[in-house]
Image 1 (cartoon, rainbow, N blue to C red):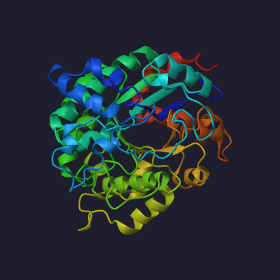
Image 2 (image 1 turned 90 degrees about the vertical axis):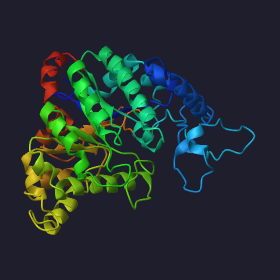
Image 3 (image 1 turned 90 degrees about the horizontal axis):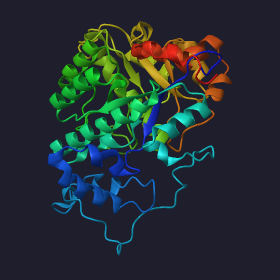
Length: 399
């Protein structure tokens, strides 16, 4: 165990599925979609000026109403004769703290496991980086095929981790029947499957209390798998009304999601469902819970399905929130709302990651030792109880 004999769980790291797109998707693509995928892949790669470029954004994000007919779905190759609007950026492998992360970690699990050792992390939960944005594709079937391919890749990838690597599935929110089928399949087939990654808003802008999502929530509750709420910044699925710098966008997106889940009664309709907010930060939580307590009355005409106040939901143990290791207001949030709901995250291998210093940054925070132990790992055991069978085998990890 990597923190004074206690487990350390990174609840939010990533795989950059676009870095070598074909390594992620090509071999595991459904046969009937391989020709379309080859077309798609070539178009994406033609827009990647250097390693690490996403390549999706100029292809089909955003979908402008005035676009030329057929442009977004034709997957045309970029014309090298045309100027490309690509401002100079730091190398995508270098973090804001100046550390260089080997991009091979995106397809070679041994590199990720090595970096976890360096960072003092015992277990990692891995989100995709951009795949939820495929909700803008016109062909919903192709979107689902991309997600199925990603799921197969991640199952193989995490199998090499000896219980230390876990992954989340990607939803086709425009085909929840297919998404629930994938959830149920992988919950049965892969012991390292952690559930599904839910964006902060539906692709059409509806909030997460949308009743169309109830079958998904019920399935997660029945399978005893949590919901992992996570989104990107200034890309689909967009948080309505928000266009803001990356850090602010993430925080507002988390508040938008939590407001719907609380006020819409999702926690009350599904009282055994655990829900986590990821990459939304945590310092704002005391403020928002106060405002929700003040503005939402359980059972009112505004919130008819809500049975408990926001504070009561926080106390219930259903809600979890990941924090950034260097957030200044973590101690205040912990003191105000309790030690039981916070999760550790690194955002590895993205540029904003504190890797390899995340654990030490939490250790330096001015809060009780019991809070640090819970935040770094013990709370994750309640959020994802399936970890309990894995943690005893980690006794020698990080020692």
